[in-house]
Image (cartoon, rainbow, N blue to C red):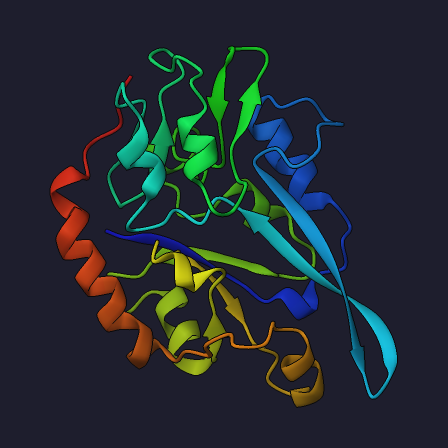
Length: 226
């Protein structure tokens, strides 16, 4: 298993349903900003007309995750399916993982006095056999699709084989598993909603990158630690 998520970002209406569902699922204070998942905004323009591009964001569950490497206590680790997890009981709050993360996806959980992040609902859903996350299940415009990219028959693989996509900060070499789907029917929006120099992938061009990183890291994947 190798869990990942696609984001059809053009469909996002910034309704906050995903954020509320995530916070409810994981016991995060409702008004907390950029904790577990959030929607970023960036100003763009098409033919001189400004618009705001919405980009749902969270932990990218990188296959070559630097946060795992820098953790001195093993509190950041790979769980089954390549999900990057945190163990609040052994976290010493050194914040090394926060510094190492290129996506600013980690935060200090004041309740447990430990670093926390999105875990794809691993402890509340995945270990119970569910194949969806709270944010996916709640989104009214179907922005998110969670699944196993090792399963060639999965819905997420069928989506990735059908749509072009990009990943964030690919120059960091982390091999992220959040795939941002380019709009199919609005080429102008697609061209103007990505940063200059961004590589546009198909599944055939990104899969070898995934496989190389998985071969490197798979020995570290392990069952959930208590």
